[in-house]
Amino acid sequence: MTDTATGAVHEYHNPDGNLCGGADTSAFPSATHAAVAGALGGLGGLAAGDVALASSPLLGTLASLSTPAGLAAATACVPDAQSLCLLAGQFKVSVQFRNPNDGTTGAGQAVPGSDASGTFWFFSPTNTELVVKALDGRALNSKYWIFYGALSNVEYWVTVQDLATGASKRYHNRQGNLCGLADTGAF
Image (cartoon, rainbow, N blue to C red; front, top):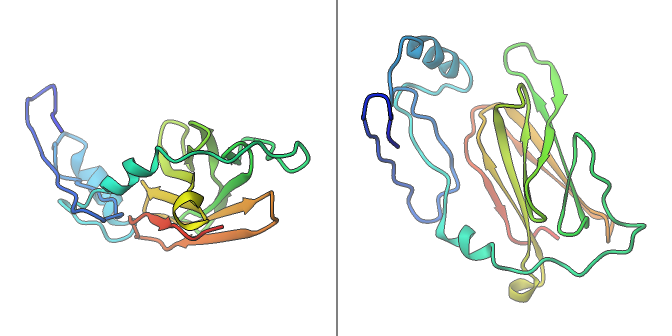
């Protein structure tokens, strides 16, 4: 990563198989750096310089897997501001979060990306908090796969519903956790 104003460069490495995200609150200091670092430190115990990135070569390989055949109109997901509809509408994804500052709860706001993925924001539409992806892995293990990548360390719950079967899964991310999830046996 390069700061185009100063030319300063920071390089990060993610070991194979790691699904944890991270934050480097001291990478590019500025006048507001101390305030931001202090705020992040209060949300889950991050300290200046904490770094871990979420990426795996496996995730790129999985992107080439096919999506399911079309669903009957009666079972297809209907998208709304708080739901992603993935894989031709077979899967409905929603997120609930808890604000660590005051304990209030809310619903993540969905931003569709593709048929297989999308994002959610919690506090501001310009601040993505979570990426969610569903893949048809049936050719490999007869299952649909669910992945999420954490871009937030607040507590949240991801609910995925398979509208074709009625099955549902709920994933909990505890406050302070920046790791994602790969459930290759989800549905």
